[in-house]
Amino acid sequence: MKFSTCYIVLLLFVFSCKENSKRKKINTTKSVTTVTNWRVRDSLRLDHILQEALQNATTLNNKSSFDTLYIVGSTREENAMDVSVQIRFDTLFSKQQRHLRIRRSTASDTYLNVYAIKNMSFVQKVAHEQLAMSYINDSIVDINGDKVKDFLVYSYSNSGCCMRNLYTVYLYDKEVDEFRHKYSFLNPTFSPKDKRIRGFGYGQPGTVDLYKYKWNGFEIDTLELISSLRNPIDGKKVSDTFYRFNKNGEIIEKLLQLPKEYLNIDGIEWFLDDL
Image 1: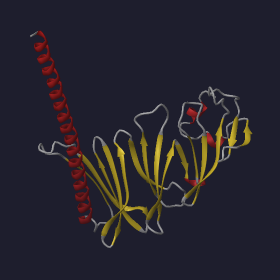
Image 2: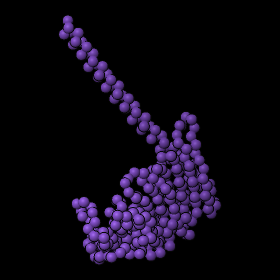
Image 3: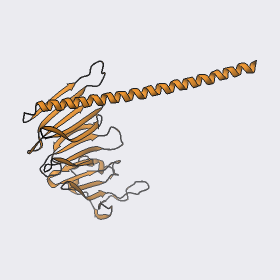
Image 4: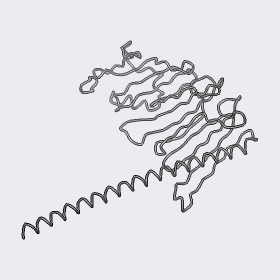
């Protein structure tokens, strides 16, 4: 009798564990489904808001330029985030062509869309999505020194050990009304007048390299890298002097001091620290 009772208790315990496991699996599936439905719902809502913004821009198309900002709220049934919408229409990038820029901002993401007018309708040229926590701003400015404005998105990652200013550049070619290239630069300082980009990479203070690029039309040429020599094992400095490297990583010159042109780089202290 003792054996039978223990056996029955054991069977009940195993059956209970199986049922609990099934319930857990079912709950997990429901959770995944809920998240998926939420994402689909928000995606459809954001697309609808974009289409409404385009419709609003169409009705205002008779104006030479306009800049408007409004908030799309949420109903209790929707239970969604408010969306800030800014619509800007003007000769944003060149005097020969008007463009439309729409920015949709939520608590979690920022969406940027740029359109040109073709055959009395808006044609999308740029679509950029950025986490709200990392998005800083976007601007329209000449980056490569060709006297034509480009589209620039500035972001800063919410995680990481080191300085991480990230600029995403969409270069505008007015001859074909297209954004021909997309570039990303880490910790850059742009100098459109001399068509140079100077900056430094990602890493701990005193361990990163300086870089200098040159715009060649819509392309980029690497001119040089500058660094101090360090032991590859422990990362400690071998000397207090600087060295120029070519794009192949070969030393081309020993420097007794850092060239003055690099001293104006935003955040240059990061490079100089520990040197």
